[in-house]
Length: 372
Image 1 (cartoon, helix red, strand yellow):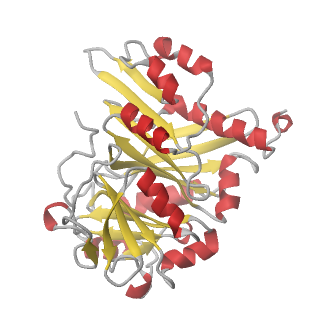
Image 2: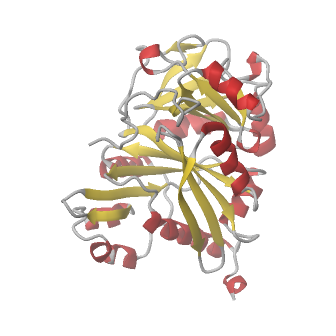
């Protein structure tokens, strides 16, 4: 069984999906020292498969995940670096008809990117997105070809799908926003793209807290949790100060075999967030009866587990996930394997929050007394 809805049939334009959204196409990254991005993505199992014909932009791929590294002087991506440091200056949605989707978005009040082609990563319609980043709309994918055929040169075979570390699709990505702005950005996706809220989180730790609204697109392939801090010194606020604005907090990629993937990434030297305490793993069997996972291997790798275990009728509902340390400025990565569970690791959300909070306390960013 695949991680539905990633393996669902291609989307169509409908009353429920008026923009024809059909998944993520790419996430773009930029850095003052782009060599760090090249090294990071190679370490994570990505392969450089294409380069832009006229710009210093490289396409890295693993499975159906596309990461673009932008080094082009004068581009929006490099302007974003000047404002934010290491960053994710854009992302792209796949849509059935990009021109139609763009026109509809503008009619509904979206801001056009309004940039000349030489400043854009792809010469396709683009909107202003989170924190001044760009949201590209791409309709050349799947049976229609590749978004990169016209402007990029393939390094080897055309449009390959290298297996890499076993990651193969973008499961979701998150936004961190200023307090009071969570509903603004939820409204952006709801109004323009007919996203709907599927989860709401209110997480409280020892000295801080956060709120999160998890949204999904009508096609089900684009998921975006939007986070805001409950106070003025928590982990979302720290991100906003470090990033100098709102933006993408982390990108989650689906794994076919998360154990093998994580063991390979650890062996390659990718740093991960601290593992949860011993008690987390001791409670797995009682929390998720008949989960069927190797607890010792979970613990050894620091992999978190959530879901319902085996539910009535014998259906397995398990989600496995782990988070890297900050890798691109304050941006980090999640690696996830879904075994019948379509959530966001609700049971792990607090464990992750507490892990980051403990690191903040150790570094002196948070004072435990603030909670008293």
